[in-house]
Amino acid sequence: MRILLLDTNHEILQNGLEKLGCICDEDYTSTKQQIEEKVNKYEGVVIRSRFNIDTQFIDKATNLKFIARVGAGLESIDVSYAEQKGIQLIAAPEGNRNAVGEHALGMLLALFNNIKKADLEIRNGKWLREANRGIELDGKTVGIIGYGNMGKAFAKKLKGFDVNVICFDIKENVGDENCKQVCLKELHEKTDVLSIHTPFNELSHKMINQEFISKFKKPIYFINTARGSAVVTNDLVEALESKKILGACLDVLEYEKSSFENLFENEDLPHSFEYLIKADNVLLSPHIAGWTVESHLKLAQTIVDKVEKQFFNTTPPEEIQPQKRVTGIGGLFFKSENPEVIKNWYKTHLGFNVDQWGSTFWWKNNENQPASTQWSPFKNDTTYFDPSKKEFMFNYRVADLVGLLKKLHEEGVTQTGTMEEYEYGKFAWILDCDGNKIELWEPIDTPFLT
Image (cartoon, rainbow, N blue to C red; front, top):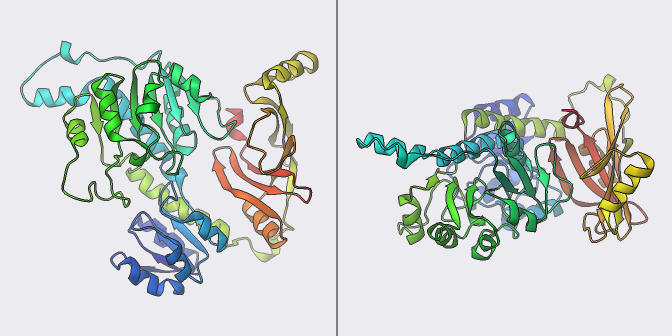
């Protein structure tokens, strides 16, 4: 497999791909148009954020099997068009989630304790103790918007503090032992510290604006380690001036170039930015929340591992077994007019051990390892079962989701949406011949045991 590397990365990426037998060519300087003239020679492309991969680029890449982005999101790629062309899309949110979680926590503690302000004052000969009296995180409610890899990593870092952690996400049932999922209204009512961890999309674009900020019941502190485009900076500054927002930690800014490598498209500094750089209650960093020595390596290794798993079979022919498909029932999901009432009914009359998600049943798989099946009622208006109109959905545990999806595609089975990965496994969705939506789950059961 011949692969074109379009951005510099940790050397482990190129070395790892070449160990798999790939031929890697580097081109870090040619224009996008020049790349398009030769991209048809390659089966794989690896990029960070150098330029957008759009329909024109994809049309030129007639032999492309995959596009890998060494980062968390795929916003610089026309995802739907690439999928139409049968191109695998690979990202590496696992590689820098820990770094993002640590950075968000570090910025918050620095803000609460006036560390930047106090440091600068001492350097200028000022020793002001009372003026730098801090506040504690203890007892506060941290609200997280977007509970994927990054949101979960931040919640995990908060576990050692006596805080209440809640989250809002457009997907249902994403909460875990570190964070309770709530509706947006409850998030607005309870939050003391708001941290956003949303990917770039239409829903998150300019999400933090005057209308959204005004709905918070209490003045809040604000953290953004996601995307600068999620925040209307003028509205943020107005909220800082009015004390609706008491302080902000901003690793990303609305003014960044899409490549993330430079701040401004021109030399003019917006008025709101001038306010941010002068404010004592604002901390800024240059899009480095996921930019650590360790994540540099982890991101590269994650790409290598995913390319290997999807395109290279390292199992000797004599060890290849018939492909396992479904290995058990992973979940029984159904609609209910009042999920809380029916959970309590099952708890009272049938002894279900229920929580906010439903009830988890444990059993042993063929390898005598703990495995689980989830029973969960959903509200009648849920969209999680779409496009199926049925009142139920089954989740099936599978051994190799990527391999199974490839086989199902060959067999003409309809897949809806794209595969998603979490710390508790991989998920994908298909439709059976009756139009029932089926959730396929390659599980990692250990997070439920800790």
